[in-house]
Amino acid sequence: DWTSDVFIDASIADLKAKIGSDKVVMGLSGGVDSSVAATLIHRAIGDQLICVFVDNGLLRKNEFEEVLDSYKHMGLNVIGVDAKQKFYDALAGVTDPEGKRKAIGNAFIEVFDEESNKLEGVKWLGQGTIYPDVIESISVKGPSATIKSHHNVGGLPDFMKLSVVEPLNTLFKDEVREVGRALEIVEKIIGRHPFPGPGLGIRILGDVTAEKVKTLQEVDYIFIQGLKDSGLYDQVWQAGAMLLPIQSVGVMGDERTYEKVVALRAVGSVDGMTADWIHLPYEFLGKISNDIINKVKGVNRVVYDISSKPPATIEWE
Ligand code: XMP
Image 1 (cartoon, rainbow, N blue to C red):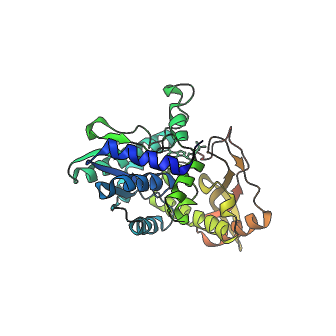
Image 2: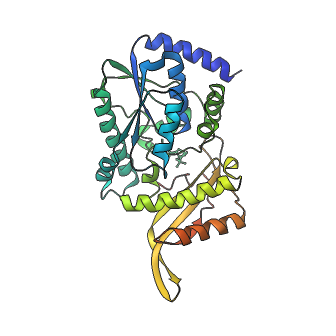
Image 3: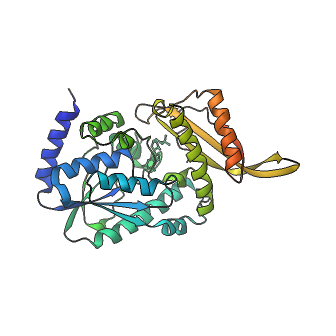
C-alpha cells in the first residue's frame, strides 16, 4: 500500500543515488507540485539544489513577492528573476491558445537557460511534473492528438544538456499534497489551488497585454480572497477568473458603458482529469460580482461558468 512516508524514504534514497554530488537546477512555479518536488530534492541533496523562480508577469496579484518569501523561509536556495517584459513581448499579438503556450514555454526556457548558464557544474534539471501532466500531454490517442501541451512536460531543448529528474511523476495531486504535508511544508503552499504554468496568459482570451493582466489580477484577487474569507476556498479544487475578449453594454448613472466581461470558474475534482462546477452560494456569487464590477475599472459584467469537464476543460484555453 502507498504511504507518503514510504514514498519519501524511497524517493530520497533514489535521488541521492542518482544525483550523487552533482548540482540540480529547478524552476519553481509557486504551485504545490514544484514546491513539493523541490523540498524533496532539497531533503536529498541540500544546497546542491538551486531553484529559479521567474516572474513571467502572468502570476496572481502579489504572488511573486509572497511566494519568493515563503521559499526563502523554507530554506530553499532560490534566485528570483523579473522577466515580465520578456513574456509580454513574446505574447504580443498572439491569440491562439497553443501559440500562447508555446510562446510562454519558449520564453521560460530562454530565461531559465540564461540563469542556469550563470551557474557552474549543473548536470540535472528538477521538475514538478505529476502523473496527470504526463498522461494529458501524451494523450491516449498519441502525441499528435495532444489535448493541451503542458509546457512543463518534456519541454527541454537539447542544447541545455541536462538530465531530467521528476520525483513526482507517478503521483496524483492528492498524493503530492500528502507528501508535502509529511515534509512539513506550510499549509499556505500545500492547500493552494492548482495554477497552470502559463498562468493568467491562458485565462485572458485573445491577445495578452500588461494592462489586461492587471485587470484580471484584480478580478482574480477579489474572487479568491472572497472564497478564503467565506471559508469556501478549501471546498474548491480550483478557482479562477477568465477575461473574455468581448465587450457588453451596461449603464452607470446616466452613461452607457461598453466594457469587458469576466467569467468566474470554480470546480471540484480529484486529479484535474474530470471536474464538476461547484454550486457556490448565490449570495456569495452576488457579492463577488458586485465587488468586481464596483472595484475593477473596465469590467461591467460577471458570469459564472457552469460547465463540467468533460467536455469543458477547466481552463478556457
Ligand atoms: P484543463 O484545462 O486541461 O486543466 O482541464 C487541467 C489542469 O491542468 C492545469 N493546466 C496546466 N498546467 N501547464 C500547466 O502547468 C499548462 O499548460 C496547463 N493547462 C492546464 C489546469 O489549471 C488544471 O489544473
